[in-house]
Length: 192
Image (cartoon, rainbow, N blue to C red; front, side, top):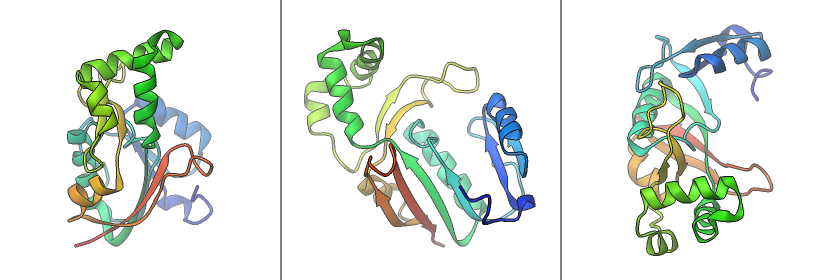
């Protein structure tokens, strides 16, 4: 999204999936891309003005997400910006529908298993899910570098971000409008 806004030598990309790094190198032929380890460190000794993370926090457990939010905080400049996405809160209702009717599709069947595993009392939990908690279904990523407990489906609420990350970031924008983007997009500014 920001290729025209930055000098190409300043564009960096990181992922734990080696295949994604190779794909990035083929698609975006400018910049530098590196692999990092699960719960590792961002592999540059630099400070960044802007970091974007599309469809990453929508798959991280609370523990893994907090690890990466601290890593990002460490490499952002003072007042640096972070733009992330998360699944929409409507995903919780999608989960409820999947558990009610798991035979609707293979997707519904697999999703319902995750819901029942993560939320055994789903009838109560999904209707009254607190908006200051992360909604997370552990599904694993299917690769050695994506352990089951660290990767799945995640919904981050505005209140959760304020409560858990508020000492690191100020929320500038939180947009849950699927007519604009299928995921929630969140703009954060580093504090301290």
